[in-house]
Image 1 (cartoon, rainbow, N blue to C red):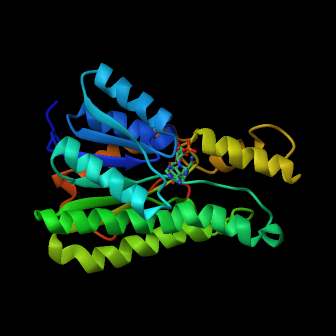
Image 2: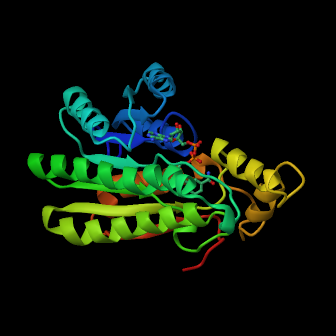
Image 3: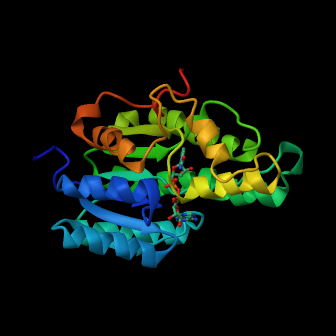
Length: 262
Ligand SMILES: NC(=O)c1ccc[n+]([C@@H]2O[C@H](COP(=O)([O-])OP(=O)(O)OC[C@H]3O[C@@H](n4cnc5c(N)ncnc54)[C@H](O)[C@@H]3O)[C@@H](O)[C@H]2O)c1
């Protein structure tokens, strides 16, 4: 079905797997032209090749969102391939489970350098490009329910996601005049490799004993009665990338099956 994102040039970071890969696949199926970007260039190219195999348009790019030069190269490549940059999904992220008092400075940097600093760098470089080319644009960040509430033992992760919400609000205020909309998606408990890391961390620190216990316990809070799949995030991603959300900015939308009501 034709949508108003057809032919839009869209970057998704952290799209080598998980939520980002599913968003990239979904938007490509709608006719958008994708830059599938990930720290693993191999994983990114695999997803891009799969999209091309299904008749879509996609290029795979290696990026480290913590490195400004790398982010600039990703955006340059996007413009080279697709002519311009219309939408960026700043989705790349890492997680770590650590009891509050055990979090070290290195742990803080490991999580916040990707989730907060990386998002800021990608926002800055994408917005500069959107301003230069004119015609507005859309920035969609991946925050989390942990961007709305602090979860122990994910304090540094929660802090990084509160930062994403703050960056979303501040940039929405700054760039509304350029018709650049800035919003965020806040997923709940999504069955991806990231949750395997979080669940493993709970066990490692003696907080749970059984595999998937933390995953099941958290997911059990969702009033819709099941954990999320990456596919659950595609609808809101499509909405935020499309003209249907043109009058919405500065919002961080909870798409969590009903875990946090805010
Ligand atoms: N899985 C969940 O339950 C959940 C819930 C809320 C929010 N989120 C957020 O959603 C986003 C995607 O998570 P996911 O579950 O798909 O995780 P995932 O671990 O499956 O995928 C994350 C991807 O990001 C990439 N990445 C990591 N560091 C990077 C860097 N420096 N530069 C570029 N790419 C990098 C990884 O290589 C990986 O492919 C993250 O921001 C995460 O914090 C996930």
